[in-house]
Image 1 (cartoon, rainbow, N blue to C red):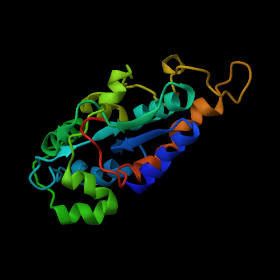
Image 2: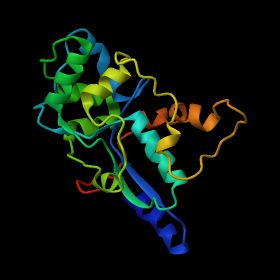
Image 3: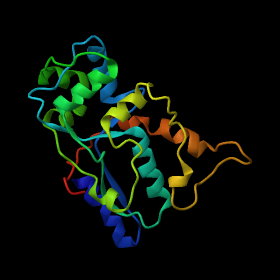
Length: 212
């Protein structure tokens, strides 16, 4: 895409460039998941269309960790698929969401309804791509939520894990702290909240690459 090519041109001026091709970001307080929850909570949810299209999902916490590493690790450079390592077909995604809510998820959702509900963000869910984070994994990136079941349990608040704080132990290089003493810095505590708009624009116009 034009914007990606333009960004990568900065490398000609010795500027380190990192491009994330972000999948469907799942997290509390917004995004496609919030649009889907009402139907699924009523037991009226199900796969989109045939259900065989892949969902390139990723947990918001892991996207935040990717950005933290990209900002603080000078060896982090290039184009990366920001997706979980275990993509699922939408029928499996719907089954997992229904199970997390304790509801059946058998009724297929018509494509037109998803386009109305999610607008431009429906394209990834409707068309589907089996994108894999191969370059992230080759760098040793550790996903906190590689499996959808655990990710949904966390988002829905059923696993008892608090993910509001970025884990400094996973960051290579200095963290730009903005506080003193033992108080948590704004960067650590607020970044997940600042990243939540990604859930509204989670699937960029650039198509994800299966090898990235």
